[in-house]
Image (cartoon, rainbow, N blue to C red; front, side, top):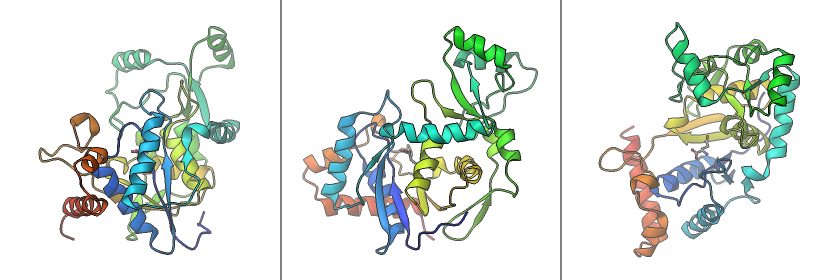
Length: 294
Ligand code: GLU
């Protein structure tokens, strides 16, 4: 489905698991630049990881970005406050027979894979493809597991979702490249986790659609996931955004900038006396270097 928005809408969508570092600023600049002076730039806080996200990081992210001179269209959407919205999408997919309850624990999955005569399938996100153990549970088996109080996740039935669409899936990059999508390589992905009835794939596509995002910008590490997102968008008849990917900034040892590896936070840079324009320039130069000569 085509977008109705005439002007670009982009978003910076960090997960508030720590303070912002230079890589985040570079990503935010990349998204803001794609919004152009005519469009809108949004900030969205993707805080569904209840173990790792913290409210103080949410406020620090907004404060740092404001100090750097970013402005965005309000309100800021916080995914943890939108679970009932995601539930509606889950219900729609379930009513169409495209999801199932999976009661497998991590160790059940590992055992199933180890016992299988076939080599495990690697998913592009680094894990193993779910072997499908719970895909065809009978309603009696499901009722029994629920009665036993077994926790469950909701998975997408990938084969059913693929058979629900009529034309081959692609994504479009904003330089007009058309990329074929192979979401089946991810297998039956989790749409709603045990601890929170949501997941990255569900929330990011849901919110991009509901916020009218016309150009999704993201790091190269999430490029492959775009295939799954295009499938969800097509199945849900959501508009198709374009995509623009940027490299991830790396330290002098070639490691991705990450708080846990000691990447300096914007807070620390501010405390050292750097101005907002110094930091923006550093982020821009680091991104230009990561992109390399065009
Ligand atoms: N929240 C994701 C992250 O922090 C990015 C969202 C996306 O563009 O997919 O890595």
